[in-house]
Amino acid sequence: MPPSIMSNQTQSQDLSKGQSLWSDAWARLKKNKMAMASLVVLFVIGVLCFILPAFSIIADPNNQNLNNTFLNPNKNNWLGTDQSGRDLLARLLYGGQISLLVGIIATTVSVIIGLIYGSIAGYAGGKTDSLMMRIVDILYGLPFLVLVILFSLLISEHAKELTDQLVSLWPGQEVFIKKFINLVPLFIAIGALGWLTMARVARAQVLSLKKQEFVEAAVSLGLSHRQILMRHIMPNMLGPIIVYATLTVPGFVLTEATLSFLGLGVESPNSSWGILLSEGANYMETHPRLLIIPSITFSLTLLALNFLGDGLRDALDPKAAKD
Amino acid sequence: MLRTIVSRLLQGIVVVFCLLLITFVLVRLMPGDPFSGEKAHSAHIIEKNKERFHLDKSYPEQFSVYLGLLIQGDMGDSPVKEQPVAKIIEHSFPASLILGIAGITIAILIGIPAGILSALKKNSYIDYGTMIIAMAGISIPSFVIAPLLAGHIATRVPFLKVAGWGDPFDWILPALTLGLGTAAYLARITRGGMLEVLNQDFIRTAHAKGVHPAIVVTKHAIRGGIIPAVAYIGPAFAALITGSFIIETIFQVPGMGQHFVNATKDRDYFLLQGVVILFGSLIVFANLAADIVLVMLNPRIRA
Image 1 (cartoon, rainbow over the protein chains, first blue to last red):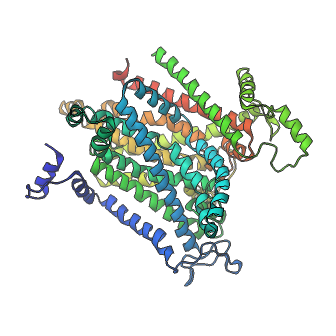
Image 2: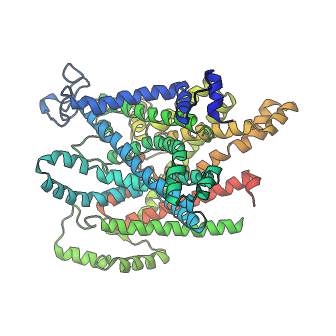
Image 3: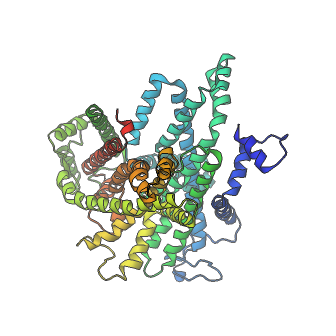
């Protein structure tokens, strides 16, 4: 009996109305208190980081004022100021934008690569499959952080040339372009190296789906490989893919913070949570506030993302191992 | 069994070779070279130095010279530190190894009992509490925990220092920081593995036969239940040694991590290659060791 019918019986008597996989999953997710709390936390953090700075309530995060260094929280600076007199709240929110963007965009890059690679391997099968997965095995053996560092340093050199070209194309947008060009190496390096798990997940899904009757029906109807993959297999593997993507975001946010903490990621004066943490660690003994506030924000976000990913896995992919 | 080990070792050599090749090309594609650092030399001396380290030749030529040295067991000299790479690694590896062993020991001692307890008391407050703490342990990065531990514990406990690597007491804080995250993962994995086994028929049979519950857990359930955890310990150990550079930086541990970060920044090609070869080999061996232990624990996959 498909799960949708079972939960219909337990939840409502209205059997005439069908229930899709998604509304079913949503019902299960709603019962998971930690996941729902995480959803609220992430929504609030998202609004604070991406929408609030658009209004002029928040100070300029790069506005240094050496007369106002290390101010305690006050009426103008709700969370106080840092070692250069910059508003901590503003830096926290703009830093959050960067950190979350790195997490989301790098995840998108890795999902696209992993999904395409994994489904081709699984669909093709045979020798192509084992060759492609052997390559993944080899790449798995490489230390991720080591390669991300090398890769992002390499791309960032080319990014500088690209900046000059872009600035000459759009003269007015210099600040904006510089802000994002700095991040592109990180997006690419993390995404280009982080797709391996996704490829394995996608391949396993395709392998189990392609043996099922509806795919056989599609084959016997004479549909092309592309149509079968895109129209019939892809929609059925969205659940696990979304789950693993959600679980990937916190990992990549952490990677960005680690790199920035070591001085190899986002560069000053741009802020990111990793930069705030590493600067805060320098003033830990005299001004613990500069370390503790970013630490709490950062850890809370990662915690919420992990709990949400866990909850989504239980809701969308109940068969998956609960490690 | 022996055949599997040999074929896995050969595969491992391919992995390390690929890693070396990628590193070799990437570091040389990066802007700058080992001699463009802080010490400003005249063009003449730089030319001489490049000749000495064969950096004036093409990449394939450089690579074959380097491979030739490697086969003789020589990792070359560090152009920045002006010392043999093997010597630098010999001096710094013990600290990283101690840190890694201490870290994984802490992780095992905390993580596995916590996971077993959580599984035995499934859906109780103990279970929820443990799993929420474990999730926090996974989510809070080590570089957040490290300064907090250093600031709040090291300053209060007399025999602990904020940073340094003199006596064994100095191992405690870095190892604790390093081990906590892994302990959290281990707890989650152990819980999952135990739950799977506890639901199986042979456990129910043992209970039905009136075997003491403690014996059921220790003699029957744990053996199968910790298999996923064991599979995770091998790679985790390698990850602790290769990924400890943040903790080494914060606690000023004279390990390999600092060399890895500095070699990347200084474009110290040969040192970086040496460190990467060691890191890669460690990962290969750790994965292999984990697989061998798994086969011993689980007779069903013994072919």
